[in-house]
Image (cartoon, rainbow, N blue to C red; front, side):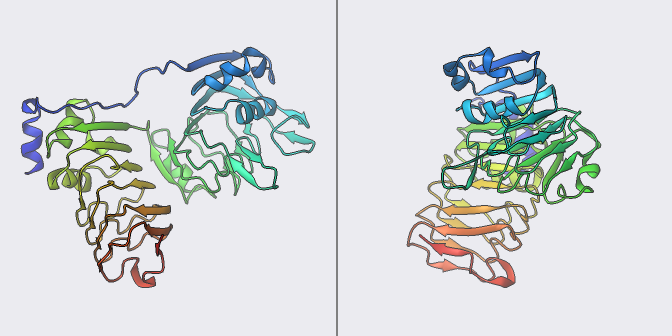
Length: 354
């Protein structure tokens, strides 16, 4: 089915149902606070209230003491918006830096803001944190501020000129950087930002439940979203080759894709080729085959990719050019077809069996 035909019939696809979230309403556990005096956030709510918050918006004045409480005591915090808050100077031992007196400069995300030292002297990031929105006043993101925040998928900045990013500020995180329109060159041209996926505008998330194969594009458009604008795509239900053609040809700005609950058994050839901002992919649980060069040129795809146990074939060059992909882990023992140059000239050393 051609895409044009699919788009032309979007009003006729009444038998499908799409639930698409760009801004998915206000969660019940969304809280907003004005902090009049730096260091007093924790006094504004009880421990149980703090632990129940998932989406938090703060205005007013914060300091490193507040960040320590955000890191250590808000156990379920997913989204933090401090785009309309300022960060004040603090000097002392009650901030985020582990066990020492430290001077925290103004309008800088503090060192170790969301990274905590554990009992064995290693460091671990805040596992619940998924999105942070920073103000246009930010000057620096300090050392290890988000180190190890493995689920931090969005770091959004309101500032048009790139703040200083210290080398380990986002270490071990798989994060897309969203910046104001017209400012991406400022970020890409500044030291330590150049390795990240930098995208202009607001992040767009889409959740689609597809009941009729070939209707992915029509469901997106009917919900007011253009495929080219989608950054985070989750699809459940039935997909066919026409749907993968939409992903391949009309969704250039994908950052993360979750197909784990779709019913597809094949990732067709070239589906994700040259999607340079793609950081994460969750494969269908019933997947059997990955087509040739399906992920070739996805230079920012990183971490470890786990293959479902039913995978039997990985075709030529499937992960060619995925230089930041650490390993591809085969969880089953059914692979009978392995194409050449899976990872390019370096061969198959990234494919391991669990």
